[in-house]
Image (cartoon, rainbow, N blue to C red; front, side, top):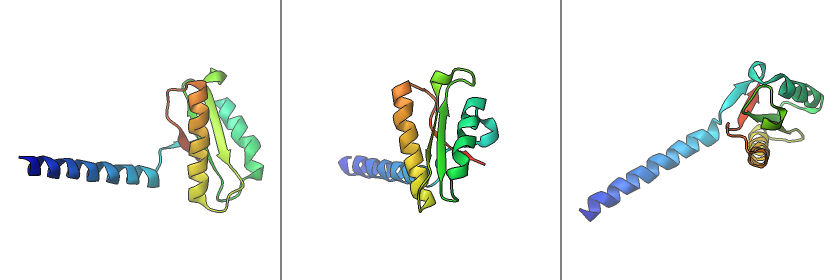
Length: 109
């Protein structure tokens, strides 16, 4: 009985780690056109400094409440994957401060 339980728990842990790995490779995205206007304006201001590896992440609970939205970018970066990780981390930090319930998502042009 213990051996079966151990195998089941091992299989569950393996499945969860694979799922987490898949999410890390493909984080959630939001199209630029779906962002609230205030976040689109912030993105447009950051855009001239961005290169092909720059990434931004956004989270918002409302399209009208500016206190419930955030957009964070990683601009001066050499690797796109690192830019995405940093943008998501900056967004998550700000999301927690502002108590935004919606998850952070990478902005996709």
